[in-house]
Amino acid sequence: MTTLVVVGASTTFGLAWLTLLMMPALVVVQILATRVGVLSGRDLQKAVRDGYGRTASVVLLISIVAVNIVTIAADVAAGAAAIGLLVGVESRWLIPAFAVAVLTLLLIGRYDEVEHVLKVVMLGLLAYAAAAVLAHPDWLAVARGSLVPAVPLTSAHIASALAIVGTTLTSYMYVWQTIEQVEQPCTHEQLKVREGDAITGAGLAVVIFWSILVASGATLGTHHEQVTTAEQAAQALRPLAGPFASELFAVGLLASAIIAVPVILSTGAYATASAFGWERGLSRTPRQAPRFYTIVVAQTVAGVALAASGIGAIKLLFVAGLVAGVATPLGLVMLALTAGNTSLVGSAPIHWRLRAAAWLIAALVTTVSLTFVAQQLHLIPG
Image 1 (tube, rainbow, N blue to C red):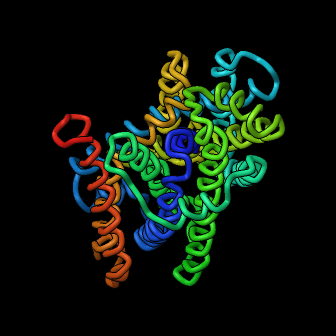
Image 2 (image 1 turned 60 degrees about the vertical axis):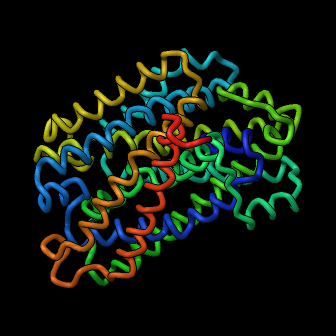
């Protein structure tokens, strides 16, 4: 989520419209993932393995893990930085402690207990909305940036657009959505309730993303402050929007990290275990699913090592958004293919309009990704 801080600092409100446009895209993807999970009785990784073979499953797994490692590192660093900001301690010493705390939650908590903790922590994300108001933005400029699409074809704007797309439609979100349906099975009659939950969650996420962009755009963007660490962002916010906004930023950053890290760790472990047919699930103990929890620990170690490398948390999060933006199209294609495979979801495939919307979203994300890559390779001007 802190990717939006970088976007706001570099483009002010110029991409606020794209943040709002992610709402229908995220709703489509999350509803599709919910239906795939419920109707197939499989998480996406297992569905791809059963429907399209080991090779396709491994390719999808690589794309998920590549994004996960960078994102875990970024969120662990962000969580430690947030605690450091709140208690006045150097954040690098808190990175291992934060990672161990999250790992302990996953190792000793059952699925429903972990889910309950994350739902409570989600309330902390409302701090971002409060920070947006305290930033005292030019609301006319905010409305213009939110309602009038404009993307200059510069490499900076394309990178920012890709980071927004990658942060919003990152693979762990819809893979996790399929996992939830397997962990907590429901009947076809209860499917609408699950879809309603998915829509509500998508709406909340977009409001939070938009609030982060507005808060950072009104402070860092309008004053041309560039940041690469959470400490720099908070220090820049303090004189521009007041100390309370700085504290709210830290609270929101901590909440987003606490929510993201367990989900990302679990998604990577589920995907790996599904690809190789291992016992898996937070509903199982480490003794019942040792390889599943070994993957959880291995991802944590890799993430901590990268987080401790000295790269700023916000820079890491922005890079993670870019990596996710490039890798996301593959997962979306696999999701759309699975949704239309009657051998996986049953004799009545998911409605063609929903699948067509998913294909369109995949095509648009692919276009942005290819444009970004082409600009980085100097194949097109940027």
